[in-house]
Amino acid sequence: MCGDLRASDAGQPVVVMGWVNRRRDHGNLIFLDLRDRSGICQVVLDKELTPDGHAKGEAVRPEYVVAAVGKVRLRAADAINPKMVTGEIEILATELRVLNDARLAPFSPAEDAIQNEEVRLKYRYVDLRRMEMQRNFRLRHEITRAIRDAMSAQGFLEIETPILCKSTPEGARDFLVPSRVHPGEFYALPQSPQIFKQILMISGFDRYFQIARCFRDEDLRADRQLEFTQVDLEMSFPRQEHVFAVVEKFLSAAFAAAGVSLPTPFPRITYDESMRRFGSDKPDRRLPEMTDVRAAFTDENLATLQIDPALPVVAFRIPNVGELSRKEREDNWPMFDKNKGAKFIDDFKRLAKGFPDSAARVRELAGAAEADFVIIVAGDPAHHIKASDTKFEGRLSEREINVYAAAGNFRTELAKKYADRHKAFEVTEQVVREADPQQAKLTGEMIDGSQAFHPMWIVDFPMFEYDVATGHWVPAHHPFTAPHEHDMQNLESDPASVRANCYDLAMNGLELGSGSIRIHRKDVQQVIFKSLGISEEEARQRFGFFLDALEYGTPPHGGIALGLDRIVMLLAGAANLREVIAFPKTAKAIDLMADAPTGVTEQQMKELHLRVQLKT
Ligand code: ASP
Image 1 (cartoon, rainbow, N blue to C red):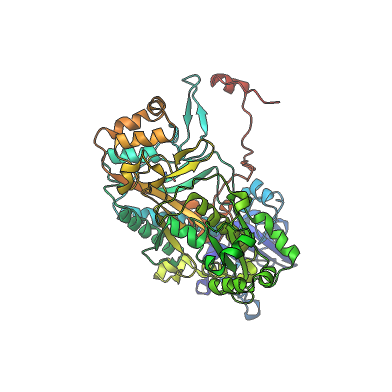
Image 2: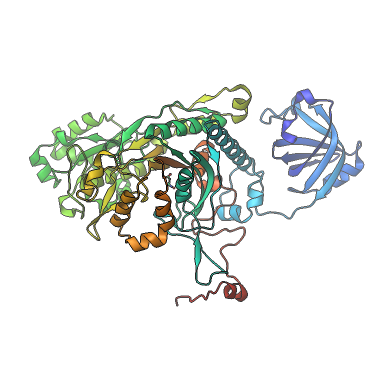
């Protein structure tokens, strides 16, 4: 392969095939940079040695597909290119064959950064030829393989589950497929293999996994796609710890495949603690934590500042931002979510004028340095949101959670905006840049990822959340999540107090996965359906097969699913999932290359017993 040739190959006869990356015509000598998936090497066409090859070389253009026959030779000292791994050698061709010509594409894979993403997606086959993309997909392959190996080593069987099936509730809209054979009836594409993997436990497989494709019809964001891939697993007779240990094994194997070491076990915190410290259930631990600064204010201070004294008063700091003008601060204001019943103070100079002691104390409590941007977030009595005030000893109320979340979201957005100044994310970029999957494979040598990647288990989520519209407590997770053993008796009498036996895995501000110990009793499952407002009849119709299965000897079971695309995105150092999915959809849910979705023929519609009625 082009990229494999080294000085030690000098003298070897070779045949290389690939694409013309660049061509330089020096009269009697033509240089072709030939590219295949392994890399690039230089081919020399000397008019004297191969007049025919040289003539063909004059006609080839970028992205022509050629074969070069020749001999590897060392370059002259002054022609060595230290930037190329093949820079010490070149191939002196004795023959050139043009295997195919190529139209001029709107961009060249030889370019590093192509700004126009729509063009990249339309000509995806040209885009994927770029070395960066080739690297991303090789990495994806290595990671997936490492996960498969790690799961097999732990006794898990990979079993496929149907794509055409019945709705699985994961909180998104279903994609539906009309049945030709059964007029008016539809299959749903799986939002996840959830019900099937539970049935596999009832079927006695004990440990299942699958690199599974899931489909959710929802609005796309940078870290979402309509179809995505999960590392999905389920096991019988587990406790949370068992699931954690399995995930820690396969995830550290996945990181190792990328050349990065990831220490285990991962730390754990409760949902409440995560909200308090990070204002989020997917904390980014590369940034300083939030601080409770209630103690910096007297009750009178709070009254003057119109801050709700019963709700949290927190501060967070973005390091090294330096002084901001009023205009610069104002530009940040739209990032603050005003619908959470909270307000913020970002003008410290002004605060220090009116409340010098409080201002000084806040900075001290937050551990703020001179150049740090400090923001206080607190409850706004003028904009109380509708939420439950139910409060349990030692637990956060919904209103409190909202104030923390407002602070946490603002913190994340500002941290993204000022990344150049606080530089907290650079350590990750550096580790990803320096990691060498090939080296790791050969020698087991890895780069230390402990400062760059911060996995964290979040546990003890509330089981229900208050739905202000209906005044009901509704399950906050998919309806197969078991409640905490202790809280079981409160399920109907006092839903707000019930904690779920579920867990999330977060890393660097991303949710990598979530799972739970499942309900394995039919009576409990029915209570949960009921609390979701699903009647017995509807439950029968939608999940009857599953409720039946629960009655035929169901072992206690639990599992989790991790987003494979996200794992690869993190390890590729990519800013977007589209960089690690070969044929992704745009933010408008379009496949620009294949031009999907599109209309279908009358005949097809007829066969499917469908008629489209567009809204005018
Ligand atoms: N099915 C869940 C999901 O897709 C994961 C799980 O509970 O195992 O998020």
